[in-house]
Image (cartoon, rainbow, N blue to C red):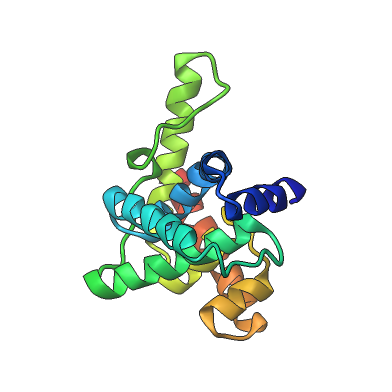
Length: 181
């Protein structure tokens, strides 16, 4: 968090390197977040670019009051909603389509297993209602607190907790159903 404050301070004073470091630091997780909320990897990339363009344009007015990652994740979620409203789509693609997955696995068989597991989870996420998917993804990938998600979705914290619980239960049900088949 201290590094983020320093980077924002430097960027406000014109440092391109600071902006590059912010982008490099959060690109992967923000892209994963956008891909899990949208239907197409190209749309997710557009969202990420739009968020950083807006960030650059508003940096003079920007005040970092918490986590930079959480702030950028909220921006991504809001922009994803805008894209979904425009396109009227509500499905998701595999994370494999968004970015190459880096793994510690050295054996080809381990890579195949990890890839298959990620595809199963991605398919299961597509079956969740968007509100539940957004809560699950923002909390797990975006590291947002439930209170922040509630503010973002303009609902109560209890509603967010319910969406999270129902989403996880449905994911468990879907994934357990795939295992038993």
